[in-house]
Image (cartoon, rainbow over all chains, first blue to last red; front, side, top):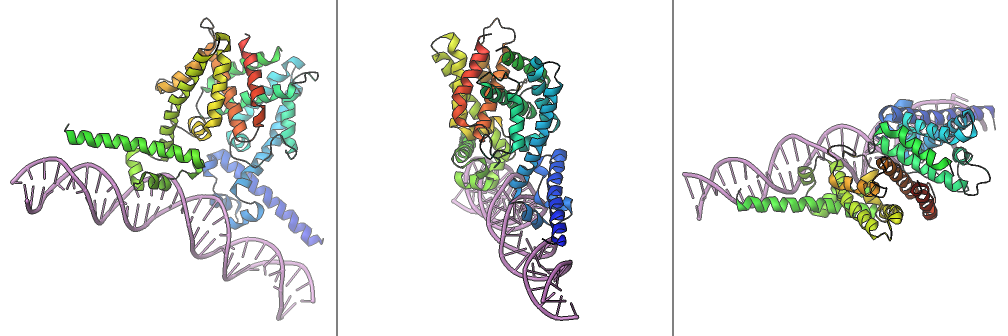
Length: 190
Length: 190
DNA sequence: CAGCGGAATCTAGCGGCGCTAGTAATGATA
DNA sequence: TATCATTACTAGCGCCGCTAGATTCCGCTG
């Protein structure tokens, strides 16, 4: 491959990431309903069809944003778990970090966990960052616990429910702390 | 009011319900993305603008479908709780009924708990059927438990998380039974 | 019973959506 | 410099939610 083609490929990769970033920023600023292919194209200063030379369609762009988010979430949860004062507090720290993530980046969270997606969860082709994020939950339970994956699934489901119901105004946001407390207490002493 | 006007009002109310039912059937058959004002109008055999003489917009139609759903859910949960062999089994029965409802009518469930809505939750103007549905959860805990509303909120959140993550393919559906078991065990013995 | 007037309903169209066929510009090669 | 494949663009398709204005309907009055 010539140096010229390498440069082209580099530039193409940059533009690829530019589109993802622009989509995410637009969604975080005005919500996903404001992310149209026209507005996105204008924002990256290319014409609409360019988007389709990088992604199969709008859904693929959303998925790309989501995958970026998984890495961030995994790092966020990992940090929280490591920073926990003692092992018994790890679960509480990770759960709180999860809810913080969801409330501080609602649009990103939606792309990851609410919007229709082709991303494979709990399968062979699951993106590693997603596995890692789930692993942070699993690691909060003792290794000799043979049902820790199940524990992690239910804990995650509960947190997701809390996050999404609160974000859509279906449960009052001010109760989150108390609910979190209850959930963690319920899970830890067993 | 003349008899003629009464008849007109009656017919109008019938058409109102016809639109709601048609929207729900279409959504359950082909998903909400297939419910467009054009297709809906064709289905009820009226022109598009008629929809707007009954509802402020498409969102209002979705909300109307959701409110119908709340009544059904409340009845479903109430029946499950009453049919439980003993009080200790009430929570398990209600939780299972909730998950059944979500999996058997996914489109209706989405209108109620996922799609953007103007319906007021946990407020003064909350629709009575919605209050009743939530009350079924609360009633599963002992009356002297002063935190039973909190218990109910967290249980509901967890169930919602499980339902929605499973429906969108983010957790494997075949694990639901085991997860339900774990959740209920976790909640009941306290 | 004729025909008026307001209400109910429809036709037609606006701007915007995701997406794509076909054209024009670009730039490396011969 | 001429060629030609690649790249990016303009223009447009069929659909969306929604609405202005024309049209039809129908109970009421003279």
